[in-house]
Length: 138
Length: 175
Image 1 (cartoon, each protein chain N blue to C red):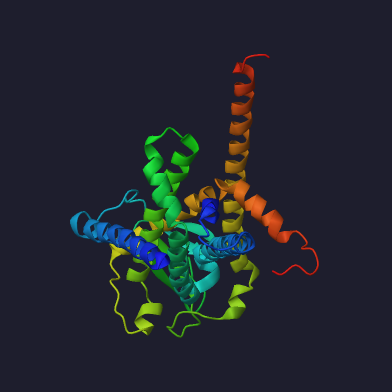
Image 2: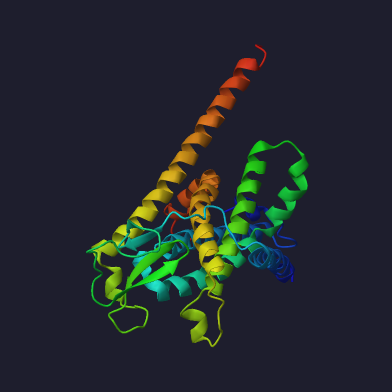
């Protein structure tokens, strides 16, 4: 019963945030960071800057069966085998080129975690040292 | 990622029963949090997963995240009430968690709004407007920055529970 009550509270909070998002999309449909900066082509984890308009540079070619998908200011390349259907080939997951994306994200998270842990340990040591210094000698 | 939830009262259960329950709850918290962290890292790697896995994983993460929030709702209420008292660390964690709540909610909601595979497969039409695409990209980037901070702020609890979980149990002791 307690779980259900708490779940209802969580759903209510989430609903409020979603409603704020909906209101935002209706009232002021612009987001921070928007601007005429051109688009990015994300191909196997390596972003390539595209000129404004999101077109490939002269001479630039995409592999067969690949199309561009716009995601915000980004254009993401997905290879769908030319079938028009989104790709779901599990073999693709084990391609070293695709794994680079996952590895980079995991690395980024580990770096942030390490930085926060080091900062936390340093802060606690500093506080302990300060407390020891200010405490009266017995 | 809050370890405080393990302090929930066990009511009328015996001392031994309470200990077992707390351990089970701690295990649930630990493994659910680990699954969400790994799941989010994989889901964020769009170039690795492709759209289908990205969308279904995102929906699954949304459900897991609702469960995570429900399990730690006691902590949310308790810390929100205590915000007036000058405890810097709790305040920082609360602020990070609030930002993460907003970012993650909008990320999942905008992901559902722009779904090209999962929801249409269920017969639900989606919005597909540029605003929701941009919001999804923006909130995903904010979330990927906040998730490791959220994890790291609880590193002592994670290290403690991880050490206990990975330690060899004495023979004959029930799990």
